Length: 186
Image 1 (cartoon, one colour):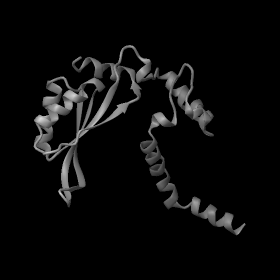
Image 2 (cartoon, one colour; image 1 turned 180 degrees about the horizontal axis):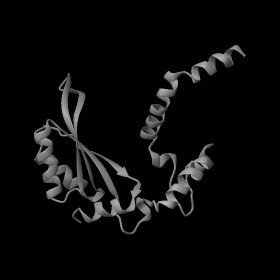
Image 3 (cartoon, helix red, strand yellow; image 1 turned 90 degrees about the horizontal axis):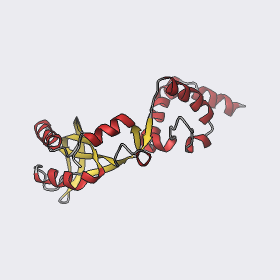
Image 4 (cartoon, helix red, strand yellow; image 1 turned 90 degrees about the vertical axis):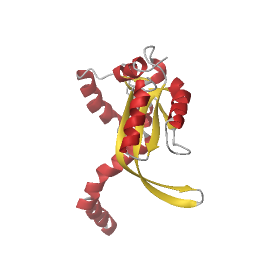
C-alpha cells in the first residue's frame, strides 16, 4: 500500500506530467510514426491494431481523418509517385547552404531543400575531436537521383568528405509525394 501511495504521488507530480509529452514525442521520432501505425482509412490495417490503445486511436484519429478527407499513401502502393528519399547534408555556414540548396533545386535534383541553421556537430576528424557550427540541409528527392545528387554535392561542397546520407520515405501525403515526382528530373 505504501508503495502504491509513493508511486501515485510520483506519477501525479508536475515534473512527470511535464515530461510525458516529451517522452511521447521522443518515441514517435525514434520509432517513426509509420512504425507505430499505418493509416489506411479504407482497411485500417497495420501494426497499430495490435497495440492496446489502437481502438481508441482509430476511434479518434480515424473519424477526424475521414471528415477532413485526409489521405496518406505507402510509397509502394501508389502509381502516381516514385520511391522517394530524404537526404541530409551539412554545410559550414548559411551562405554555403543557400548556394548549394539553390543549385540542387535548379538542377531538379530535388523538389525541396530545407535549411536548418544552428546545428552543432561533434565528430572525430583526423584523430581529433571537432565541434563546429553548421547548417543542415534536408533534401526531398527521388531515390533514383541519389547518385547524381551525391556527385553534385561532392563537386560543389567545400568539405573534403561531405555528409550525404539518405533515409527512405515510406509514405505520407499523396499530393506532396506526387509533387516530389513532378518537381524532379526523371
